Length: 491
Image (cartoon, rainbow, N blue to C red; front, side):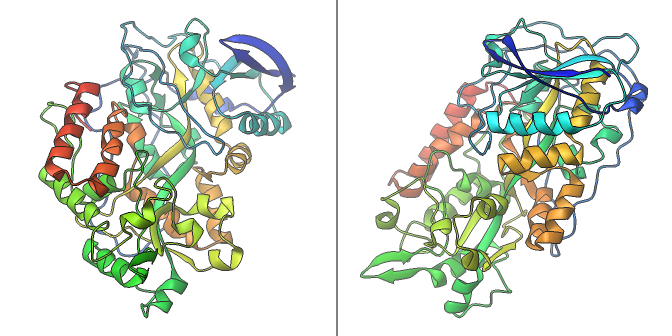
């Protein structure tokens, strides 16, 4: 029996830690070699225009590509993922440099044996759960998986890896950091909406083990107290603003409870979500670069600002001044919020009896029912791999339900694997709406230059509270975004 080694590095130096093994995916010997790396003309799927009834998310059924062309692309320094203790990746605020080189996957017959190095920057407790799960698995082939703990992937460019953690999939594919993997049976465990999100050329730029969805949550008990029907949540912007006003509670002229909790932080982008719901497009097809000051975004920013003005729809400055970065919903000080329900539930900040009053609904719309969200704990095939088929097989192992469950439960994230999602829905029916909203998710990690999101986020506090004209704020945000991504259109 062959073995697999887990190693740990600082700056790429490996140190042996433990041994484990698993059954390989023999059928991957039939999988085609890498698909062509093609420039993506659209980085984000358009959400459905209308939706009324939550439905389970379908599973991906895309066939394995049969062509075996050579992938040629231009690698750059690997974007560095930034997971936290419950690793929700946050895009960097600086653009990635793009040195030129050519990454060509091996053209030799597919191999599912040998050593496959997996370079991950995830928290240690998540890596430990991954190692334990893989060590407990069976193995009937010669594939050896070696997990390398790497804090800074860019600091060790000479060290070859086969599978790598990815924070910005499409950008990584366009710049040659990762190679597109075939959309075969190994990825059938993922919902079709997630597969579509990371499609690049004839394959996938990355595969997610977890998801995070900022779904629309509200407190049914607060609805009832205000004389509202908890079974009829807001369905559009007008309903949302009106309901927020009715749910806002004042005392001595100050907001004691907010109707709607919206982020005032520079790490928040609720106003951008409103822009997407209004039909706003950050990357027009004209190739002129990102746009944050279009008519759609201006209208959305004005709507966002209305929640911080009298008559109160959300909360006024007096209430927000104490903790502008915190969420009011999980402290019982707000009745509605765009929030990750799974995170809210697993973190246990709300008492169980209060958590039972939390309801989920599809996001209220202006034009489209858009919400922020997408894949997390993303892995892709490194351009440095010498065993493409083995790398695909390794990702297949990571996506197996038992391994994905161990990793995502430890990380505190909802699983991307469809069967595990079904298990959560069976345990709590509210997850049906949660996973259904993946259909409408806009994931900025699929953007060509995700650093552009930083310009949008930095505008948030000024849009909410500053007296400056909205048009001037958005014009400045657009200028900053274009400095980060000159002439980077499409998506």
